[in-house]
Structure formats: structure tokens, C-alpha cells
Image (tube, rainbow, N blue to C red):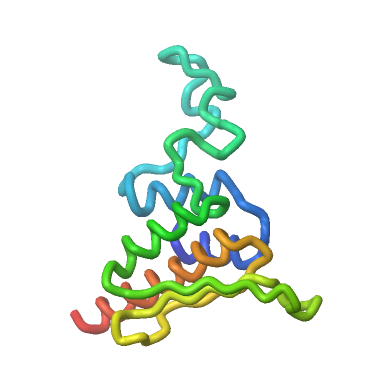
Length: 142
């Protein structure tokens, strides 16, 4: 699953997703690997399919879509000298999610933004959009 696929999936949901967290963890911390699948183990080495999934997602996955601390750490990893903003509008119109997130460069240029009913998910989605934009800028500069 590419970063673009992850963004597309997160943009369609407001529910934290341990599987998506596992893909993000692999993309940023375990490069070249993919999340484990239940059929990867079949009991070898004492692992059973039930042992690779927990209530918070897949083992070793950061909880980006459910934990603001993890989402914040992702923002800092993607834009170390930038800024992130998260706001909540308790009186948001019914058709708009209450949480709004933005990730900006050091010069306050908007790199990524997102809306969601879930604060951590909004911030994670904004960070991933910022990452894609920064990677595109790197490719164009090369």
C-alpha cells in the first residue's frame, strides 16, 4: 500500500484503523517491510495468527490514527522545522467534521490539511499529505 493509497483510505473514514497504522509504521520506520499477514506465520516460531493483532492494531505499529502523541510525532518527523495546527469546532455544521488539521513549513506555507471526526486521524492525514507534497517538490528539484 502506497502513501497515496493510505491517504485515500483515511480520507474516506473517520475511524481509527490499526491496519493503516501498520502500513504507516512500515513506510516511516520499517522501510522495505510490510505489515504481517495472518498467513505469514501458520504457527511457525510459536506465532499464531491471533498473536499478531491486538486491540490497538498490529504489533509494533504506532497508533497514528488513534493517538494524538503518535500523530504529533509523525508531523515532527515529516516537517521537523515546521508547524502543525489542530482545531476543534464544537459548532461545526452537521455536514463538516469538527476537527481541522494543518501542517505548515517553517515559512508557514501550507503543506497539508485534513478534516475528520477524529482528531488524531485528521492530524495524521494532514501530515501524510504534507509528506507527499514535500516528496513531489524534491522530485521536481532533482
